Amino acid sequence: MASSTSANAIPVFSGENFDFWSIKIKTILRAYDMWEVVENGIPKAAAPLKEKTEAAESTTTTTTKSESSPTTVPMKEWQKKNADALAKIHLAVSDSIFPRIMNSTSAKEAWDTLQDEFKGTVKIRAIKLQTLRRDFENLRMTEGETIKDFSSRAIEVVNQMKSYGGNITNQRVIEKFLISLTEKFDSVVNIIEETRNLSELSVTELVGSLQAHEQRISRRTEVSIEGAFQSKHKNKFQPRGGKSQRRQGNSKEGENKGKFSPCDICQKSSHQEKDCWQKGKPRCKNSKKFGHTDQTCRLKQQQQAGVSETQEAEYQIFYACHSATAKKDDVWLIDSETHPDKISFSQGS
Image 1 (tube, rainbow, N blue to C red):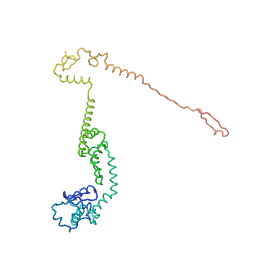
Image 2 (image 1 turned 90 degrees about the vertical axis):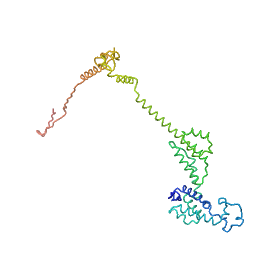
Image 3 (image 1 turned 180 degrees about the vertical axis):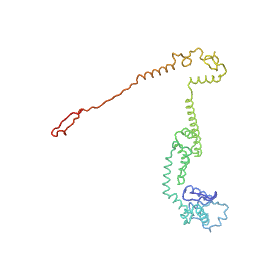
Image 4 (image 1 turned 30 degrees about the horizontal axis):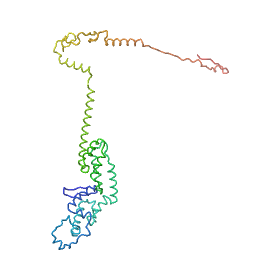
């Protein structure tokens, strides 16, 4: 895996993540104006060192290195670039990888050797690219997957396609994103397609808009669940009307308790006799409660029913006993000892 000892050091390739390492080393070689000699090698048409004509010296127009053609750059300078690029490639691989390129005489040869082994030959890269294209076309966001996870998965496939030489436009990536989302993003997808120019929209902007919509959906879902939970518990613990009124009456009675002398009717001190609720109501002598007489008292009826059931149960108790003996009349005795020549039979009792 690529690693580095410091921020300015060249990343070292140890056999893993060649795609990432190759991108980093390409950037470094371009910064030192060496990538051209690595990619194409030393041009055969490079100008010899002696070809510095007087016409070139007398011309008033100067040509920069980036504008120079291979024929105007001296061979010695190309050789210097090649040696510097090869040295950087040597420094950018670990000791276990170095033997593979130790005999390479040019930076291009060393680079092609690493690329063929860890990235594959041209034919193999074409096959891998075709596989990645198929993976890209089959990309679909799954239920429960977040925008962050789906975008990371899609961008990884796109980057791999580009590393294998695939040419995919930004607009194609945007379109693939929009048609691969789940149904809950249909509303925001319609808005983006109708109001935005997809050719000018970046992947970063699209992902940001989708994540904002995802957060709004998540908040609404949480509020709905919390509201349903509170409503369920409210209905569960809400008292009935009769009990509620009695509780309110009891609370008021508790507040006024001790303010008055005991009522002659109900013996409570929370109200005066003229305000007693039980005033004028019949009182049962059996249960000592108001609102009914002892003839209609449920407690008395229940007590009588209990006594009746007990008495009836006493008459239903009975005892039964059965005794039996067995007698056999089919037993015969044989006597042959008294008279051996005669056998007598007698039936036993």
